[in-house]
Amino acid sequence: MLLTFEKMGAWRWGLGLICALVALFLLLPIVFIIALSFGDSRWLIFPPPGWTLRWYEELFADPRWIESALTSAKIGLIVTVFSVALGLLASIGLVRGRFKGKAVLRTFFLTPMVLPVVILAVALYALFLRIGLSGTLVGFVIAHVVIALPFSIIAISGALETFDPAIEDAAVVCGASPWEARLRVTLPAISHGLFSAAIFSFLISWDEVVIAIFMASPTLQTLPVRIWGTLRQDLTPVIAAASTLLVALTILLMLAAALLRKGKKA
Amino acid sequence: MSSTFALARPRMRKGTGMILPALVLLLAFFVVPVALLLSRSVTEPELGLQNYRELLASGTYAKIFFNTFLVAGLVTLITALLAFPVAWALVIMPRLLAGLLFAIVLLSMWTNLLARTYAWMVLLQQTGLINRTLMQFGLTSEPIPLVNNLTGVTIGMVYIMLPFMVLPIYGVIRKIDPAILQAAALCGATRLQALGRVLLPLAVPGIASGALMVFVMSLGYFVTPALLGGTSNMMLAEMIAQQVQSLVNWGLGGAAAFILLVVTLSLYALQLRLIGEPKGTA
Image (cartoon, rainbow over all chains, first blue to last red; front, side):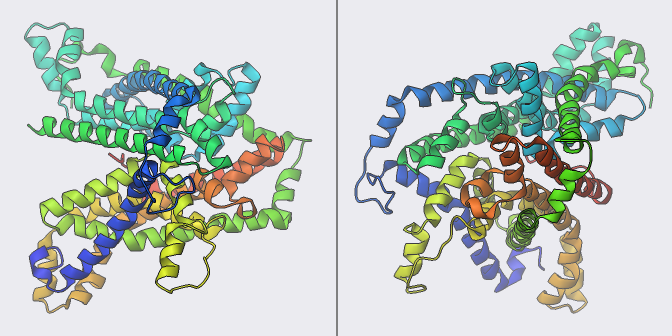
């Protein structure tokens, strides 16, 4: 009755109405920023009196925006590589290993995901000040790998759990060397887990603000740090333009992830 | 379950070597720095518990703790109320509609955090769209202060936390057998009775899991309170950052971090015991 849409009678409309309102609430800010970024009102009047590309021109004319986006991309890519590599190794150990305390270790590996990121940010800031990694690319990468790793481990170990190791054995019986079997049989079989680990790791680093505020220096700023700094001064429409580009990137990545899922099913 | 070809995977038997790189990274750059930070709470400016005494005795800090727990509680409650019907609809709606709704939830979750917060800053300001709409419909004669206060923080955080509540509830409702609800109907239950006595109780694990996750995340949230809250309504995470960055008071900052850490990890332990490991949000 309540779990069969056709049999819900008038309740259908009630439920539909609530969902429509929530969907509106969820879409409002996103549609709003996109509209503002093309509006010609400096004071963010909505609906805008006219349309313009001025804010995009300002965005691209300012080398600091481009530079910070490139810094973010660079850090994000390095973080992705390390997070997936360490996550793959740790997942193999956690899924296939036989040793005491495995469950405890798995919980420990996931802890950075639950710990408030501000605590880690402040703690790493103190440590990096001491050992001279503050305001460096290496510092950024280390901090972001720590918070991306749990997501990488969840994605990869999830894929690994559904893969039967006997298939790897079969490859060895058929004449493959153990490493050949791992690389050519196991790795392709868990590739969807590796891809989602990579997408997550990149997005986590790319979007991360709190640690970045503490790690950044005047010469090394990621995109979120730059947006944060600008936001604290004023609500210029240039941020709407930057945000719109970020929304576009998100939609592209979501489509990529959706296609990936479809490919996996086929 | 031992494999016949165990010899082909000698290293997998133990697997400890595989774990080592991640373990070393987390020990050096997670455990050690957090431990160092916490130790400063009892060593700076001198050995003792003075920082904790100051935190618990002062009215300023009491207000910060109160704000933090109030907002986290409100956000949890509101997201649960909104997320339950959405999760329910996601399970039963025709495929196309459900897919569309799901895409909207994921899009809002994956959109850059600062972009979303910026949108709310503009929407909620005195001359913003929300206030002007309310005035146009005559619901208020003067703009309501919606930003730089806890109202703004709550709205912004509900927006951010909603997906984290929808996904676990959806996961639980999806696994409920529709026949159970049909049985309730055959036994003479009205729709309201079936909802209150069958569907809701069966969805409790999902609601509890989402609620714990949202509450814990809200307690330590930094960005949205800092941008939508204004300086007079500080929350815990912002206060920790401020103590360390602007006031260079590592002792007090460390003590506040310790309190936040203990509350967070206790709630996480509770979640592990009750529900099990948090799922990825893919």
